[in-house]
Amino acid sequence: MFTLDYKSRLPIYEQLYKSITKMAALGAVDKDEPLPSVRVLAQELGVNPNTVQKAYQMLERDGIIYSVPGKGSFVSGGEAAILQQKEIAMKKLEEAVLAAADCGVKASEILDTVHAIYNGREE
Amino acid sequence: MFTLDYKSRLPIYEQLYKSITKMAALGAVDKDEPLPSVRVLAQELGVNPNTVQKAYQMLERDGIIYSVPGKGSFVSGGEAAILQQKEIAMKKLEEAVLAAADCGVKASEILDTVHAIYNGREE
DNA sequence: GTATCTGTACTAACACACATAGTACAGTTT
DNA sequence: AAACTGTACTATGTGTGTTAGTACAGATAC
Image 1 (cartoon, rainbow over the protein chains, first blue to last red):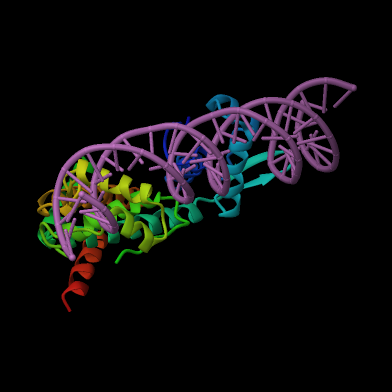
Image 2 (cartoon, rainbow over the protein chains, first blue to last red):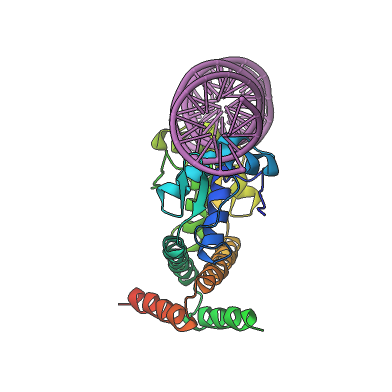
């Protein structure tokens, strides 16, 4: 269900956070759908329950999921996730464009790249 | 000369690496211009000489600078730096565009953003 | 030649964040 | 009652980044 890179510089709990946020944003999980329990997911991934809990807490703090003691954790409506993901993407886009411009890349080259990516997506 | 974020998750030696690479790529430092010595720069930045040396070693490994024992460290021609920076920027661009597309951002919106950035740069 | 700079190469120790291990408690479900 | 859920807490291990200190050889200036 999730793919982790245990050797990444990114902490496991952040990888989990990003994974679940992305799934929520893309609609891969439905609203109010239950997530695996802290203990179950920890065992599935081969990590400590504390690590999963940390990710869940961050997700709840940001409105991506909500947790009910005794019942479980569930994905909220995807709006918060979508907005967050879009904001991150646009910020990264701006950074990349500015960096490319600094290196002398022409606007046309950037635009061509964007076109190529969009064309490659729908075929 | 350099701005460091001592609390960043990015190690200081990597911040230094990126700073110097960017300066070399943008022509802010000339070819064969001497860099501050390991010890001097360390004192200026308030860090350990070992940390600076680590950055210099990585820079030399990647052809951004060259070091001569007994003499000092000097910036190479900026070509390697420019190529590397451009490659990084284009890769980030692709990532950002894909992420934005996943969130339902239209191609036109991306293109508008790119245009806005380029227009904002020359005025 | 001496002093002082340079890069380079080590070892030892400290600090911090991440992750683990274990325990405990209250609420929910069966 | 049993088995699950989230939550909270302490203690411990571990790896990485950083510091501290020392040492040596080459280059430069006096």
